[in-house]
Image 1 (tube, rainbow, N blue to C red):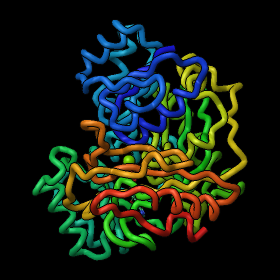
Image 2: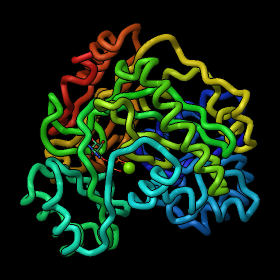
Image 3: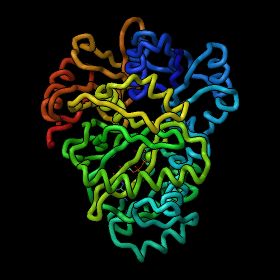
Image 4: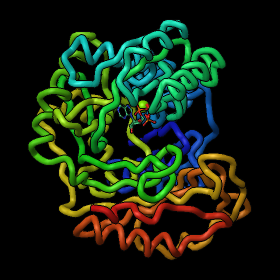
Length: 416
Ligand SMILES: Nc1ncnc2c1ncn2[C@@H]1O[C@H](COP(=O)(O)OP(=O)(O)OP(=O)(O)O)[C@@H](O)[C@H]1O
Ligand SMILES: [Mg+2]
């Protein structure tokens, strides 16, 4: 089989790495990929292409299945174009992708389908949103409606912070039209769990639970990032919470997807918080998480090419996922200064000395050297019997890697 993967991050590297192990797979193309994907067996990076040219490439190269990594092409409707052209693609249709593309749409969907989530109100007028603040209990969560690259959610502890957040989003338009409307949501205190799942429209098959670490600093301090580390499985996702999640979040979600009649053959990511009343859904994403994917795929025993086939042919109902009976810990290395300003083009050394999987997120090969290209440069995933051992091993491994200004949290998996 020939695969095309769209995207350029660590998630796409992990997908390419896992697909390359499949005896079913002969070729993997990644558009545009990165310095990690180009070094994987069977993998070739191709240029970043627009939607028309991706379809053309898939046709001309007889691609069997295309996997869309990031959310933006999904929200723009890339999968609809692929399917109209008779091409197999992993990702929801444009209408289904609104579950991630619009926070207001998504909360409305949850409410209409009885998915357990926090209380919220939507506003498209700044003055009305500010008026509502006088009725709120604090803190509140202000969320820009549209895609804002993970930066559109602001937790506000008092009126001043909330007014400020609303002004930046709705008046100053720091996220552009993503801030045409906002939701103001009740703050839920608790522990978060990421659940990636496979969806074929008839069945939702959850993958192993994971725990992301969003803040830049140890002890979950400092500003949010794209994710600085992950452990899987998530020890807080007990069987009791799992039953609550299945009954009150997963099953009503599947009913909702079916009643909307979307062509949802792809990935659905549930961002869950375990609060006083059990599991609540914070958000949906319609693609795999980054860095959750880097922690989960190394534990998966199934052939990933087969997994994607099952999604495409709507055969998930009698399929099951098998994992190594171990834990994983992924530690992300970023460029000093991230998520603020940082230097690029630093040479990464030590990558050949690792015994555990290395996933490149933002680095390119130039004249034989691997150079940093974005804030999160790479991650290492270690696997061991316990989370503690996986964490120790991940840190021993990542200490072999160096580039000027390298920064990583030193507590991923340490508190578990
Ligand atoms: N109602 C809430 N109560 C408490 N914390 C919240 C709430 N909503 C969001 N958060 C916090 O903000 C983070 C980001 O929120 P959310 O996942 O909705 O944003 P996002 O921008 O879509 O993020 P991502 O990049 O993960 O998709 C959550 O992981 C959680 O830590
Ligand atoms: Mg999201």
